Image (cartoon, rainbow, N blue to C red):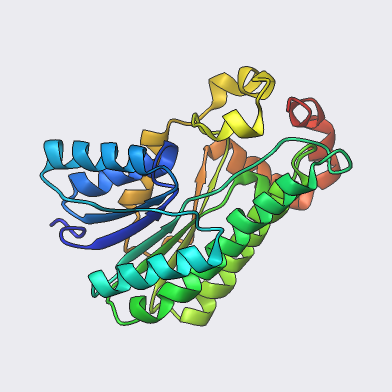
Amino acid sequence: MNKLKGKHILITGASSGIGEALAYRVAEKEAIPILIARSEEKLASISKQMEDHFHIKARYYSVDITDRAQWSNVLEEILRSVQTIDVLINNAGIGYFETFESSDWKQVDNMLRLNLDALYYTTYRLLPIMKKQTPAHIINIGSQAGKVATPKAAIYSATKASVISFSNALRIELKNRIYVTSVNLGPVKTAFFETADPTGRYQSNVAKYMLNPDEVSTKIIKHLFTGKREINLPFWMHVGSRVYQFFPRLMEFILKTAFNKK
């Protein structure tokens, strides 16, 4: 049975990386993707490929979701166009690797606005219509950095820890009326690092450990409309985060070299 057929699935950050991979997986399952990103050119290209390969016509909207007024207007347009949102995937995010003291505050503000404010607002606006659906599911893309904070990622780690906490609290508040899952990932081979790590040093050091967006998207799709609280990838980082909870000093000592590869 195809549980996704005909479902409306809204994906932020859909023009590349995990978001793009998810969009194709969704179309493959005969769901109706609603794609959100800033680049209209990329969204149009993805939409055309979906129609050519899967005969699915995606809806797409070019918008900066950190612009509250602009995003609010687009959300109104979406809600007028479709009667249901069955799945919300809060995927859009950004990071910059720098010590907190040396951070550019504009970059800090960018992380707070996209990783947190936009995610909260999108969820807030779509909750009322999603509560009318059975089943419905919210997927929040967190990070293993939200479980084990590392040097040169103080703000990024803090935003992702907040995403995990938000997901946990929201799940309890909704009392299983809407499934809520946080997806906590290690490094993924995406354009994220073009901004986070422009020198390429960190990518080079962790290349053999990096996840593939297709692998991640497949895992997420597998767990849609289930009671899965968290998806943690890769497994060894998940184990490390559990050990960190009980032996933080030991883990920081063991992983000190790895932490400073950024």
